[in-house]
Image 1 (cartoon, helix red, strand yellow):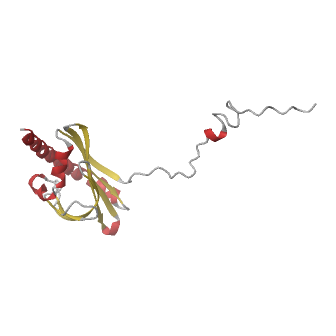
Image 2 (cartoon, rainbow, N blue to C red; image 1 turned 180 degrees about the vertical axis):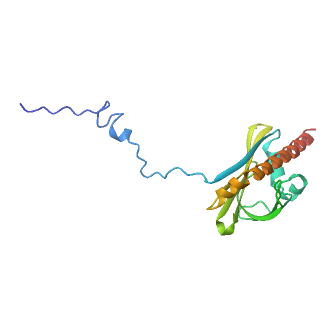
Length: 189
């Protein structure tokens, strides 16, 4: 006796058009780009809570001409915060001699972030430097102050310089906290 053909199952786990059929179970991502990858490298960072609104913190960070008054890590900063602009900075890390660096602004968003890059040794060392402000409350924020060491030789430099760089970020964050909270207290009074 020949087999009877089974009825066409339209639903259920084995159906051709069912909720668990092959098309709906597929994890294919045809036509979709892969998710973006974050930057790679060796990261050194320090975070601090500041009791001031992001606008006040940004005002202190954005005004490079006044960094000499409060910033122990960058006692000299010249340039204008614009994408593609070059900055001239004196970098003074604890226990290290002060050196002049030239960096290019990659990105900035008012009240949120400032990113710049530095290339050394013909691009063998590339760093991405960032200051990011994350509001937690109306008058309270966390500031991430860090650097990502990339390029062929960047990660080894980052590992070797981790201590002085982190202490420099810590000193800068403490000074930024004092400056922004004083400015905020003055404006509230």
